Structures are given as C-alpha cells and as structure tokens.
Length: 120
Image 1: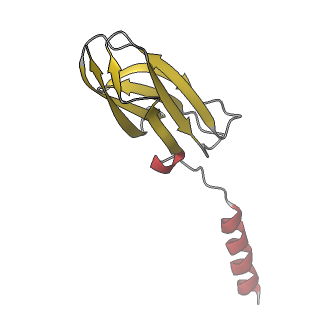
Image 2 (image 1 turned 90 degrees about the vertical axis):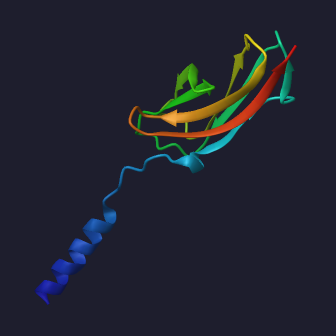
Image 3 (image 1 turned 180 degrees about the vertical axis):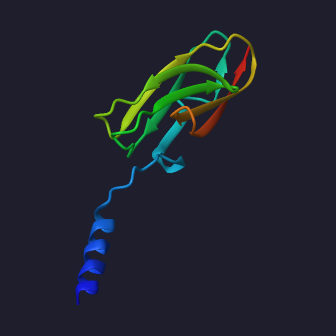
C-alpha cells in the first residue's frame, strides 16, 4: 500500500512539471510579400511577417532576411503571444529575391520564405 501511494505521488509530481516549450516551424503563421510579386526598381517592398503561440518566457527575435542577409531584427515582446509586423525594403538592383522570415534565439532558427522579382 505504501509503495502504491509513493508511485501515485510520483506520477502526479512528474505530471505537474511544466516543460519549457520551444517555438518551431508551426509558430510562423505567415511570411509573404505584400502586393504583387513583381516590383519595379525603386519601389519599396512590404515584407509581412506573423508569428503566433510563442512561449512567453523564452527570448526570441523576429529576423527578416533577403537572399540570406539580415535586413531587420525585432525582439518578440514577452507579453505578446502573437505578433504581426511589416518591414519595408528597397531593392538596389533588378533580379530575383528570396525573403525569409525567421524566429531565432541565437542557437535555434526556424524560417519560412517567399520570393519576389524586381524589374526595370
């Protein structure tokens, strides 16, 4: 009987331990280029980025990348479970661009992407 009570107590104790959840790919709800995917040289591009269900106690940042280069970073406030932001980017040359929206904590990074073209 005593052994059973200890087993029940340990089961309840282990069940109550809260794990520290980590964001993953499913936390990025939308990464897109606003408007048309073909832009003229000199036009600004609006980069849309939305994340949701980010654990409040972890320090994560939103990272905007163009062709693998970071163009903007923004910390995710701890009081926000979901956040939607735009960033404006002005391409300097024609060609194909890959936009990636990432959430990162320095050691882990999860990204989604969209592409756009710039013409003369």
